[in-house]
Length: 126
Image (cartoon, rainbow, N blue to C red):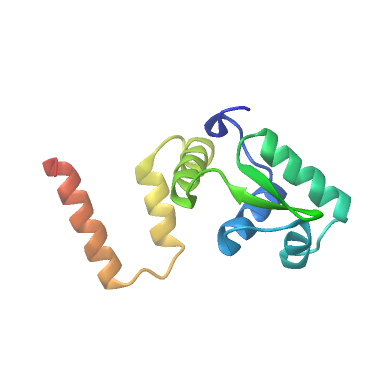
């Protein structure tokens, strides 16, 4: 099994992982019912097998069907994916990333205050 941190996910693989995280576990039928513009049953099975080979999911047999679970918490996987986005689209710049998020999102005053406090805490080493 490969280390999930070095294996990127395709758009469809990310969609499937999102379904598994939202449900906590999922069968192929669950994934098919939740996917937008779903592919065939065989394609979903193949994608889940690929995700398992990449180390993102594992399965347990439940009668005739497999139930898939994530191998790591959502926040851990999210940190890796965010790092990839920062490197790929924002020249590894946290400043550019945050600027894009703040400019393109309706950020409340409370969220801006929390971000300011987080920045100050990081600067002071707390």
